[in-house]
Length: 142
Ligand code: DQA
Image (cartoon, rainbow, N blue to C red; front, side, top):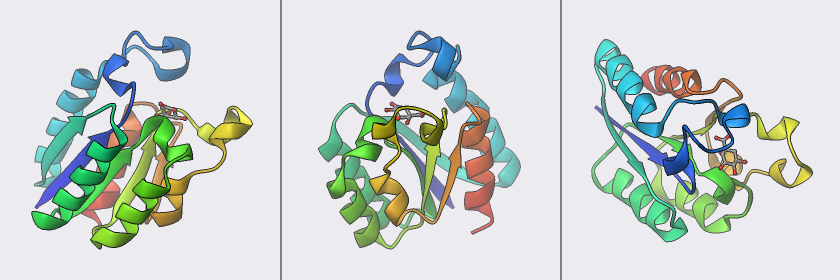
């Protein structure tokens, strides 16, 4: 079974981007760690990053088309703004687990709303890169 791991805007800059908040691991580091975790769990992952909202919508649709088992979604700031992502999550019938490196609830007020969370079956927040592995375990258990 394949799990899509979709990453949104600015996550390509992990490693140098506000390291005091997001840590020093790059997205490639996270991909390598998650690949090992996936093998352990007997899953395949398809991990991607884009800065474009509509591309995330397209990839959510693709998750349905290919029959993905689940989607781990770190939509970055689109989490807090995108009704289009919420609609896509509701449309595809594939379980989505919301992932964030930081805990948006403990940050600025404008990060407290999550449209992604309104459609997601579960969430992992504030655990840094390890949160992706925790989310993959949750996906494996679905
Ligand atoms: C983030 C949290 C969002 O609020 C922020 O816009 C990001 C990263 C996280 O992983 O902690 O880009 O999704």
